Image (cartoon, rainbow, N blue to C red; front, side, top):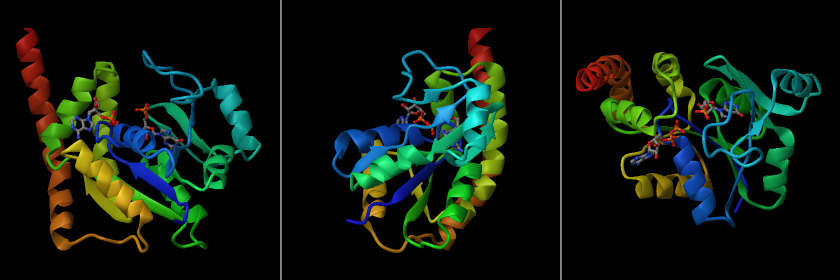
Length: 224
Ligand code: ADP
Ligand code: 5GP
């Protein structure tokens, strides 16, 4: 097995964190997780050093200046970045390293490894239906209304970036998605997309905003 940098990206609610955690739990000998640094505050249950390294802005910016990040980006007003040490640690153990990161960071990873094709694999994850994406995001109940709207607005841009990715994997049944990501990581040669996927993705962006509004209205209707 060639240890790879496996990037998982998705609009918020797409399931990348769930899939990354499932992979590391089910196949601890094949997959390790790169713990990112972030300036965002921990959600209930999140642990420092396990889910993220929760840093203040000053610490984060010092690490940027010191060249400690493989990539870093701003997302919904907070800074997030992949530490080179984290990635090296997992690769040295002979396992694939999972990066749960947003699309700007994924682009930086692609550039970083441009001269070593095959070392990184970029996977974009989405449930087949935009409505399911919105329902999962709302169902997670981890964001305020303001944060939710930032994340949903950003999703449209993220979908436009999906063509930069090597693989698109649908996250409908979790076990299937986990199995597909595991298989893709072990395979050689990344590009597996067809015309029907392109059409699907094209429609997704416009439907997403519509569905977001509808789900939102339904929720407020239920409350009122
Ligand atoms: P992301 O990290 O991409 O923002 P999460 O992994 O947090 O997304 O998933 C969003 C929500 O959807 C979570 O509550 C998670 O438990 C749920 N979820 C993820 N994948 C599935 C799936 N295949 N089926 C049902 N629920 C899922
Ligand atoms: P969340 O706040 O939901 O944990 O993460 C918000 C977004 O930041 C998600 O798209 C997540 O994948 C992304 N993210 C998490 N860690 C990193 C990182 O190290 N680098 C980049 N570029 N994005 C990250």
